[in-house]
Length: 57
Image 1 (cartoon, rainbow, N blue to C red):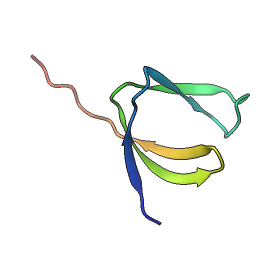
Image 2: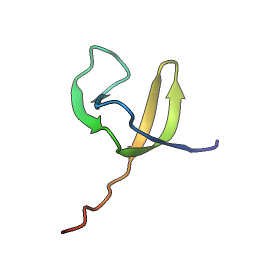
Image 3: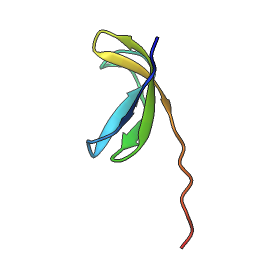
Image 4: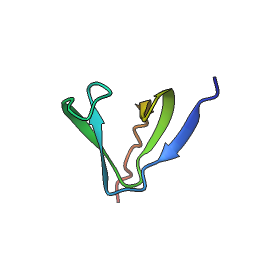
């Protein structure tokens, strides 16, 4: 399986505990954050979020 990377282009995207619109929102991805697609299921994707260190200054 080829892993794909992406960048959030919306102001905020909810991250849910389960692949359901009614599932608890456990986090949000914000504009410009990067992620990697691990799995696709219908309209849902499982992702790995990249943590990018902020530079001082």
